Length: 353
View (spheres, rainbow, N blue to C red):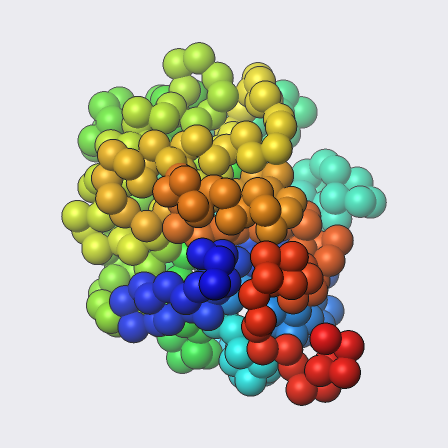
């Protein structure tokens, strides 16, 4: 049996293999509601054999959406369709997690394939917030620097969303602190120029993320897995970097976080990313080596052989896949055959095995 198709136990959850469907925005919601697109999109990856499926960035508040068509979990009414999706995924042998997110200054955008610009308040957009009044793009609206009341609301929103996720039946909660969204904005000195307890020093810049972790843990059972996604580097001189990420991961592990989902970038338009196959894996490897926490590798991982090599060499514990699973929802079934593993196929598909 390959490592890729071996099981792994994280807290009370046993995943049948190490393939994780990475969160991928679908921009297909109205008022935050999931619909049949999400059911088919996520459900087909369960049928396709992935061990864990994580929803796209799911907004903890209406103003936390990246776009006007983002998925949400900020009100009780969102739960019904999400539960249908969770039940279908479970019925088809996979676990499912929700990625809880707040976009901060990178919010209030239009449907990306129609107009990649921010939407005005007159056209259904909203004011954006950030640690400091610094835009991501020069043409973006100026974000409002969060005051302490606003920070308390962010923490409260994450906590309330976590409780809804628990009620829906999700197996995993992942806190999104990557890709230039709000929690990442607090981490990086490029976007956080505050002079209070939430800015300046490393300890101050990580404060909000740690407080969100605590708020989530107040309602998320200790025996259930908690993930945090980070951008391990901003790819910009003077920004958040690998050493910061290792230090943060040590603290997250001490605070009871189970997995660091290790991505990069997204905070600055000045980023210079050396894109190549597996270009982010080394960051997951460094965090795993230095802290011992379970890590997930992501970023141009496109084959079963590449995935197996990452695991065999001890560079990560989980393989998060995005675009490859958009191209082929049944990649796990094919990948198992390529590695010589005999895995269970859906009964309805057995005749094609």
